[in-house]
Image (cartoon, rainbow, N blue to C red; front, side, top):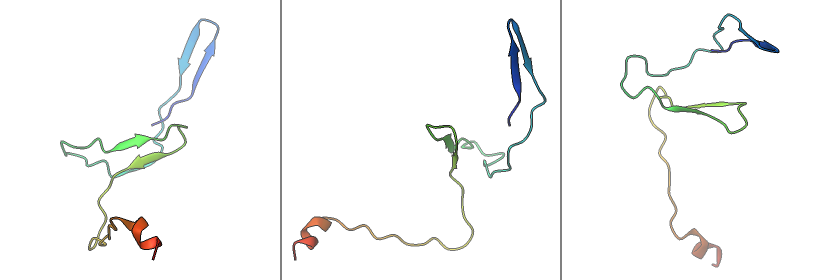
Length: 69
């Protein structure tokens, strides 16, 4: 949600809240707080499940030794 605010000396005024976007925040789930905002405040990072099969990952240990060959 976002809201326009203004200050005129001693007066603070808040506008009407507006929805920024819809996101899969795990509604109804107890672990619904898997999100954060980047340090510059320009992006939201949201952990969300994807549809379909998971893509496997490969972890290479001691990869620097392979560079010497």
